[in-house]
Amino acid sequence: MNEKISICPNFYTRLETTSLLVHKVIDSVKQNKIKKRNLIWFELTGCSGNIISLLDGANPDFKSLATQMVNFIYDNSLMAAEGEDAMEKLFSVIDDDYILAVEGAVSTKNNGLYNIIGRWRGQPVTAYDAIKKFGEKAAYVIAVGTCASDGGISAARPNPAQCVGIQSLLNKKVIKLPGCPCHPDWFMGTLAYIMLFGEPELDSRQRPIMLYSTLIHDICPRRKYFDSGIFASKLGEKTCMFKIGCRGPVTRVDCPVRKWNEGVNWPIEDDSPCIGCAMFGFPDKMEPFISYDTT
Amino acid sequence: MKNSEILINLINDNLNEINDIIDCLYITPNSCAKNKLLNRLRKNISNITTLVQGLEDSDSTNILQPDTTRIFTEAELSTYNGRNGNPAYVAVNGVVYDITNNAAWGGATHFGLSAGTDVTNQFASCHAGQPVLNKLKVVGKMVE
View 1 (cartoon, each protein chain N blue to C red):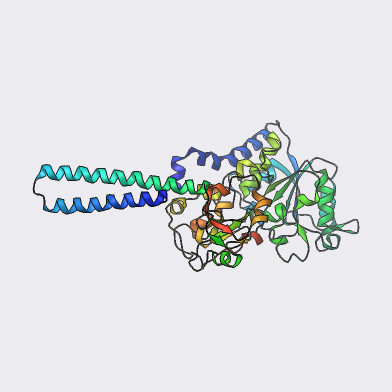
View 2: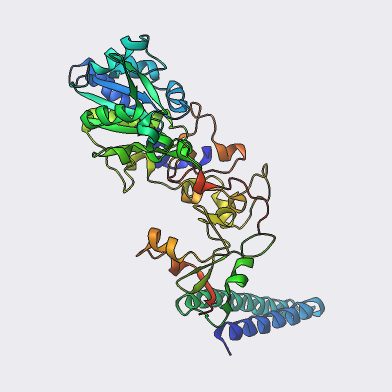
């Protein structure tokens, strides 16, 4: 892959897109060309993996995002306020301008009582209520991660809490950033683009084209093995893992270029097939993740 | 005789000639004769390259003119599930396609679907109007 990056300007451009956008926002805020936007981040039915992933953001990092790009109004994992104070802060911006980022699916069973995110003025606030109230009034709604985008693991069989992705509860467009978890660059780049230019160009599944346009298979460093018909028969072999169930050929996102943990590695480079975590239908429709009994 | 059979016969003729020329090369002391034989070898190799290309084109022509002489029952189709060394086939609108090496069918599965099954309805709901099937090799048709 490094060899590819060294010869293909497209890879450089992709890697620098997020960083350029975010730095441009920070500069523009400093120069009063644009205002900081309010950001609300909901953690609904999920594992909170996306907020943890966001904390891993680099160049610029999460601290730059929270202090120089946006007013981080609410996130139950990161904010200092707690209990009703936190909910007061949340509701204080409901009639103001804000961007809503949501991770996790929404539990719909029993009017959403399976997920209560807090109490406000003595009443429980369900995730279902919160997404309806704040989703409709938000300037932009961003589904961060696979659960918010399409239900994901939270909506996997048998889905006892009847979880759904947030788009099915809202009558407005939701920008989807699927991935389990969402790469920090995917979120920060999208947020920065919105602040600078408004809604980014989206594909038919409402994903930003600048991030989700390419199949993993098309830019996979092991593609030459697929083309030559050299396939791994088990994990650990450093050839194409298509025969044991790799979902790279149906998964649109730029993992091979961007990689994870500040660009250290990504699944296929570590001999694990792509399991399609950034595609609709994950995980149920991407199973089996590994299959040894093949041709 | 099918086109592909004619091409295979021609390839075999060329291979036989190559073997004869190699035998001659062993016993010919004359360097001029050796050069002539080497030129004939090059010509044979060129012929084979052209014929192989013809075979590949013939394969793609078969896609446009499906070989529907082979009839599959549901039970037969189910054995072509891409497991235990078997190729992976699926049926769409009564035609059976080979998806063994189709990239989107990793592990002989695709968005929760398995090879060896009739996926007509699922295909219609996802790929209607897309030229997906044109790229697949036809291997037969389903029993009516």
